Amino acid sequence: MKLEILSQNPEGALKKTPMLFVHGAWHGAWCWENFLAYFAEKGYPAYAVSLRGHGNSDRPPRFSWTRIADYVADVAQVVEQLPDTPVLVGHSMGGMVVQKYLEDHAAPAAVLLAPVPIKGVLRTTLRIARRHPIPFVKANLTWRLYPLIHRPDLAREAFFSDDMPDDVLQKYHRQLQDESYLAFMDMLVFNRANPRKIKTDILLLGAENDTIFHVDEMEQTAAAYDQKPGIFDDMAHDMMLEKNWQAVADRMIAWLDEKGLGE
Image 1: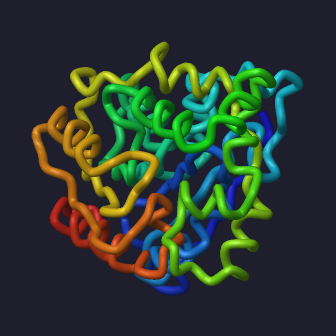
Image 2 (image 1 turned 120 degrees about the vertical axis):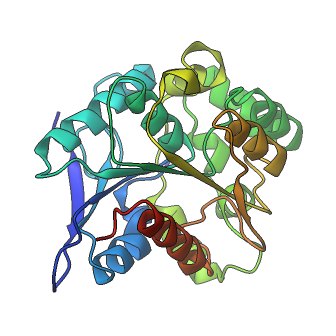
């Protein structure tokens, strides 16, 4: 599988541990533009992958049949190509992909940003069905998830804060893509993460104004790893693209320093 990998390397001395960023549903490697530049500035070799069917990566002929396990295989493929095993950072669906990868692989550490809840996306699905019944029905009839975010206002409600400028919203919305229906079903019921299988240290961060996954769901997921989530005020689901994204990155870097991975 040919996968798009965006990268940015530090100009000066390299930190010991590279970073690999894994996007969520509807997104691609492009969504990590802020983090790639910032982590490279701080000395970390930074990489972001577009999972199959996203960004400029190869698109399977029957994309709607793509499973979470396929995305896990994409992450494994990229990790094998890197000179050192990276810290894994997963957002939303990417957070679930990272957890499934870690069930069978080791990593120096992992960061989950607004990840799929440990109990799955049933509550999210019901919320979307109530708020937007017509796009919801269309998505299920066509096995395509793009109807759920096909307008900029739907994307704003799902991912971004109300005060994001319209031109910035339009820029991001143009880059959103369809998502696999069977990957959604895996998140709903078929292939949820199992924290008991994961030995890697994990940092979990969430957003106060997240309409996709609520704070109490982040707390449940964090509890499965015997921790409390770091919740950022005045922030929506796409934590890496919000106006105060740097606060998230700095919290991650501080944690990596505590783990001795920033040396």
